[in-house]
Every structure is written in C-alpha cells, then in structure tokens.
Length: 538
Ligand code: HEM
Image 1 (cartoon, rainbow, N blue to C red):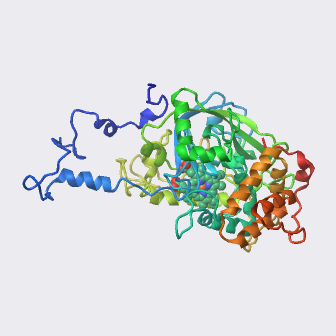
Image 2: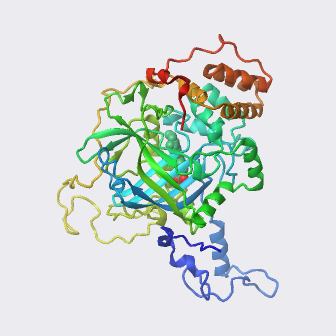
C-alpha cells in the first residue's frame, strides 16, 4: 500500500518515545528494561496481585489518565500538514513575511464540526471549523476560521448562550450534534441576530460534501499594516480549488449511518493518494476609515457579510495539504489555536466577538492542555526562535539557562534599561482611536438589522437550493417538542421572506403568520438594496 508516513511536517514530531514500541524490548517510563508486560506479579499462581508490581501500577495509572478534556466546542476534528505559498501581491496592504512572493510556510490545518462530541458523526448539519496555523519565520499566525461567513452572535458575551442552546439538551444529552432540537430553535428565534447564520446552516452549506470542497471565512474584519505603516481593513477567505460542494440531506443520512468518519476518511485518503487538496487564501480589502463601515455595512458586525460583487475576493496565496498526521493525539488533539497569535502586519479590530475570542482560547487551553506551557508541545512550537521570560509551571519542558529572566538586569549579558527593541520585524500594535467614555451596554444602531442579509441570501438561491432550505427548516423544526417555538421561528421566517415562511408553515401543518404579525424589516444598507435579487453567493 501507499507509504503512510507523511512527506511534510510530521517528521519533526516523531520522537524517541514514539518508535520505542517497535524496539527489541520494552522499558518502564524511566528506562528500566522489562521482561514481561503481559502478566502481573502475584502471590502464588492465582493471586492475589501484589501492590509491589511497579510496572502493573505504572501501566494502569498511565492508562487511567490517557484522556484529556475534549474541546468545549469543535471537539470533533481532523487535521493535516501542508504548505502555504504567498503570491506577493498583498504587499501594498500587508507586511507579513509569509505573504511574500514564493515564500513557503509550513502549516497545520484542523477541520471540525462545532457541536458534537469527539466521537460524533462528520455528516451532521452544523457549522464547520477551518483553523490554520502558519508556522511563519515571524512567529505563529493562526487563522481560526469557519465555513460560514457570519456568526450567530454579535457580542462574545453571548457565546456561552448560543453554545448552551446548541449543545445537546442537558437532561438527556439528545440530540448529538444536530440542530433539530428545542433549545437551539428557542434561542435563535428569540435572539434574532442568529437568523443569518442559521439560514446558512439550513442551506446546503450546513452539510458539506468534503472538507476539500469547503470555503473558509475569518468572519471578523482584521486590520493589516504595510511597510509604510499604512493600514487597511480585510476579511479573509479560503476558496477551495475543487469548488464548493455539498451533500444532499438524503446522502448525508445514508453516509452518516454507513461511515460516520466520512469527512475524516475522505481527507486522509485524498492526501495519502497524492490528490493534495488546495485552497487559495483571498482578501476583501476595505479602506480603514474612521467609522469602519463599507457602503453602509458595519465591518465590525460579525453577522454581516460584504457581498463579493461589492468587494471582490483577491487571491494572495495558495495552501496545499500534503501530509497526514502521524499521531492523532499529538497533532490534531493537542494543537492549540488562538486568534491572538498574530504576526507583524496583521492586527485585530474592535469587533466585539473577536475581542472576546482574544481572551477565550488561551483560557480554555490552560485547562484543556493542563497549564501554561502548551506552546512547548511539538505541534504548537513556533518555527521562529523563542526568547521569552516565561518560567516554570506545569509541564515545563525547557531547561532555561541563566539567572535573570527579568528586565532590566545587569546579569546574563545585561539589559540595564527598560529599552524598547527595534520596531523592524516586531509586532507593533496599531494605534487606533477608542471612545473617550464607557458606554451603556447598548447595541449600536448599525448592528440592529437582523433580517435583510438573510433575505438576500435566500433570494440568491436557485430553486433547488431553496427547496433544500425549506426541507431543512421543516424537518428540523418538526423535531421540536414545543409548538410555541415552531410558531416563533415561523414569525422570524415571515420577516425574512413570505414564500419561505408559507412553505415551511405548510410543511409543519401550521398557519403562516400574517403580514401584520411579522414586524417590519429594518432597512438594509443602500448598497445591499441595489443588489436586489441578483446577488449570488459564490
Ligand atoms: C474553538 C471560543 C467564535 C472558530 C473554540 C474553542 C473555544 C472557542 C473555547 C475551543 C478551543 C480549544 O479548546 O482549543 C469561542 C468564543 C467565540 C468563538 C468565545 C466568540 C466570542 C468563533 C468564531 C469562529 C470560531 C466566530 C470562526 C470564525 C473556531 C474554530 C475552533 C474554535 C475553528 C476549533 C479550533 C481547533 O480546530 O482546534 N472556540 N469561539 N470561533 N473556534 Fe471559536
């Protein structure tokens, strides 16, 4: 069969311990040679087993602690190694070295579902994660993306709410990973800013054909900086070379039963057979204006897209996945992504969802990967040299030399002043103007429109795609126990589109809400109104 060893990246992770099991003899974890790992030490032929058997205790104890907590979201994932090559054309807006023309940067990508547990099926209707770690010469850059360009909530303070509503019911842990349940529909029908993301989930985007045929979206607007210090606002996109393809609902049901690992297998098989999947990284670029809007669309609102007709996606580099993992735990499980892992040239914006994410990832990894040293785990180690003053802590693997991990100091070569280092090559936070007073916890007016982009998405669908969306809403809502929740979601659909609402209502055997019952839709930005019904999504 084909060589299962991966050509890129993974070799660096293979350690002495991983090959030991193939040697002539086994040892304890402290290196003493073992004669027998099959029988415990007993008093007499048939026991009792003796506490004195160190190898038995060590073997069972280690086994007892093999599991670490799964991720609180995106627990089910599949990863691969690859390479990113820059096209060089991003230079006018971004000084990040890995985007330079022809520059090759190793990457690790982890695809995931969001809601299911680590052992759940790949084929469920859900959002998919598409997280990429670029091991650049200037440090790790993580693009922690999804396959849907908008998010359920505008403010990170609502993230636990949507996740609690989307995860299986707390009483019986049903259903695993599907959106067919009361708590999900309860939340999205009440918290209507979630309707845009929900419609993408109900569309064919919610059941991808393959990880290889998924788009990826950074969702938030980021701020880039060029060599001259000039800034731009960008949205990141991954475009699959194979195009975007989905399963039909019937296919997803059949495949989910026959092969719940369908996407994981598809990715691994493709790479193993040399059919390396590829994506172009692209950016939509916007002028960094004081109000951070584009043609009336608030660029800090993560429930909104900017249609590609208004701001085309410009390709700036190519990602190729070339290597399967050697050890799923060491690589796919232990990788730790973080939206704050940025490199010079790429910075964050005030998007209130992104701001919360900046806190959340490291915080969760402190528990999931047990302590503050998880960046020393092989898959997380930067390929750039590390020189920090972080010391000790659980799972410290470094043996730091010297006595002066502090500044200023006069030892270890001396660093007598609080002197700043050179700006060249350093990450320098972009100075941005912030409000002069703390505001009430109000929603900005520009975030108030929850429906117009959902309507545009619906109107951009072909008749077949529309039918799939109607079927999806009808099926998922039919699985709710509470009639009031179904009725409330119909009200939300009425605000999106009367035809969609009527079709789903008929499917559910319920009356469609009247026009009076459906509140008026908030005005869309002028640019969106001009697009009318002709707005395609691809
Ligand atoms: C994973 C929090 C929004 C994409 C995670 C994890 C947490 C988290 C705690 C688990 C990380 C780990 O255990 O290593 C949040 C919070 C959000 C948010 C608090 C909003 C405030 C988003 C958005 C996206 C996204 C908007 C997409 C643009 C991902 C992906 C993963 C992930 C892809 C899986 C990473 C992996 O494969 O290891 N998120 N998230 N998240 N999140 Fe978010």
